[in-house]
Every structure is written in structure tokens, then in C-alpha cells.
Length: 399
Image (tube, rainbow, N blue to C red; front, top):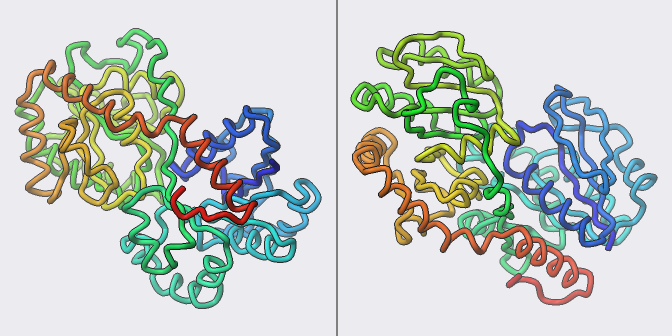
């Protein structure tokens, strides 16, 4: 099967959708499929994600934030030809527009994964521009596609406000669970100057206003002085300069004693209770998951939440906001759900820190009942089954 994955950029700042696409594409290629990726070049080439060399990756320069690429359609025609499936990730941009145009012209099957961009909270951002875009082209593109791909029931509910149910398919993101079993480096190599006795609670993901990090820092400022054996680590790429907003808040705070930029501490004091890093990958990321005791994600919303899934795959107890597709964590007793970021978040952290580390580890082990359904092999097979049903014009709504 010839498969074209279409995404606006391979900049790591795009977070979960990009990494899940990479995992799906690479595993499809391993199974013998002819896999292509077409994307806009990152404005910062040091942030570009790399791919398995079996995949044919076509990267072109973008001219605007709309991700306009001159002759995008010609690049598909010359370098890909006629794929069996075009799978687009994200909306409100030129790649989803041109994929729609190309698929109609060549009678191709075009799937679109909105990747959370139809959530109420996401629609509020640049509301007027999106209203104009919706009526000019975006509504028509979604209705022209053969299938809208939801990553969770939570996302599906938002999609169904705009799209008929019989045009949707629900397939979650994959998690490479096997990677959690690789060996770790010695703990002292994780971050310099962190006491080996410190217990770690961490967030990993984009540094963005939507992620609720300022609320987390506000609560951490209130309670961290009472928990000197805990440290908060915030890791991830800056998005739209929001990291500076957090740094300014930290600088004005009474009890936030440490600041970290990249992997180098720039404001060293005696009682470390906070580190901010840049993005972590490979062994650095693995070690952070491996040596931590708690994961926290206080986002306004998540259509899937790759970092939440990864934390569960590492058998870590998690603290997450209500607007995510992980409601089962309370039922399975492997974490807590935040109902209110100012009061409820504080109560949850106090509760979690009061528990013995052995109790937290037992909670984390309960996550295996949830995460087993997200194994990469299972999800890739579901995706390929969906493609085959679309090509053969079979019912796909329950994929």
C-alpha cells in the first residue's frame, strides 16, 4: 500500500501529533508498505524531527505561518505520485487545503486527523480568523474528506458538533511500550546538582499557555517549602515565547528557588525545588520518566495527551486535568483528576506527597490495565485496517 502522511511541519514544537505520526509511519514502513511523509521545513532546523531512512521524507520551505509551500501539489505529484491513502494531521493550514484539492482531482482517499483543533478551547484562539477560514474553506475540506480521524472519545464528541458520525473513525495514538524497558543511565547523570534523595514530580510537553503551567507554578510556590524532599521539573520546547512568561513569574515568586535553561542551571541556590529544561529526547527523556515518582499535566484540554500515555506506560501515577480522555485513571486507582486548578490541584498534590513512595509505585502499576490497549502494534494494525476499508469502500465507522 502506498501511504502519504501529510503534516504542516516536522518541528518538534508540534508535540504529540508529530511524534505519533512518526511512530505510525515508521511501523507501517517496517511492515512493507511504501510510506511517504510530506511536510514543511521547521523555521529552526535544529528542531526538525528525524525519521527512519526507509521512509521517503519530502521537506519543503514554508513561506508563512499558514504553512504555505509553493508548488506543494506538484511536489506530491512528482515525488509521491498517486498514493492509496493521504493521511493529513491538523487543520487551519495550507497542507490540509492542498491535500483536499489533490485527492479530489485524483479521486484519492483523504483522511484528516484534526489533532484537537476542533475543541472548544482551541477554537477560541484566533476566533475571528478561524470563523473566516471555516466558511471559506475548512468546513468544505472536512466534509470532502472520506474520514475524520479522532484520537479519543473526548475528541470525537467535539468533532461530532461539526461532522456526521458516519464520517468518523476512532483510533488512539500508539505508545511504544517496549521502550520503557530499556536501561537507564545512573541517576546522578540525569541532572547535575540534584540530590539523589530528591523525589521528582514532572511535566513534559510544549511550554504553552494552554498547558496550565502557570497554575502549577502558583500552587508549587505555595506548598514546595513544606516538601523539601520533592523537586518539580518542567521539560519541553518553548511555544510562542510562553517560557519567558513563566520565567518572569518564577523570578517574582517567593519560594521558587531554582531556574534551569536547557540542561544548565543558571540560578543556583541551596534548596533546589524547580528546574525548567528545554525539550528532552532519547536517553534524557527516558531517564526522566524512569527516575520520577509522579507525572503532572494540568492542561486546559488534551485531545489525546501523548505525555500522559507515556507516563502511564512507565507505570507512574499521574495527576491530570478533567478535559482529557483519561477518565479511567481514577477507576483504576493510578492517579488523580484535577477539577479546579487553584484549589483542587493543591489538595491533590498535598495528598500525593503525603503517600509513601511504595504506595505511589503500587498506584503506578495499576496503569497496565489502561495502557495495554495502546500498544504500537495494535494501533498500527487498526490504522491499516481502516485504510483497507476505505479503499474497499466498506463500513469503517467502528474501526
